[in-house]
Image (tube, rainbow, N blue to C red; front, side, top):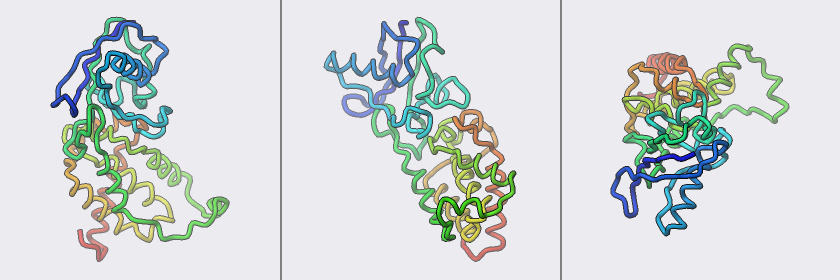
Length: 250
């Protein structure tokens, strides 16, 4: 399979531009990242600077492989990370445009790599859970309604990749933040810090420069773990309740 790649290069010898590359022998069984590995091997052999991109588990778990492929975060497949996209989804002769996540809060480090530490700071703003949760076997001793546990588990599935931010026209982090808030708000272990958590995490989200949510729902459509925007509604309710009833300053 022959492919033409238009890849965003920034840093080093590149000031920020799309550079075109051609791969002549792409195996349809390769993953998208393996295809980029082949490209970098070709560039190194030609004594050119390889393309910088992020990856870790390559199993759809960590969310590190964050790319915008042909205008879509993580590529053309629904509920799929970049590393789970395979070249059999493309045709011989295709041109593929690859660029980093675009957001003010995600500055480009180099080429396709962006700084997503803003997400880490939002989580840190939420603080710790002070409730003693015991050992692993103690989890079953805490009664939790099945529906409530299921919603908490669905929210906890968020891998923090940032696809929601990349997909949103406002670069909003509401889906990510609401998933992290909902996860603990739905469980008894998260009740002690519940009000402080939502106020401080939202304050940090705004401080990082993310945009506002306008209910486009592109975040839900592009999320590789299919996190629901119901979490955003829950977070808004949590925030209003905390502002009106707690002593924590918004």
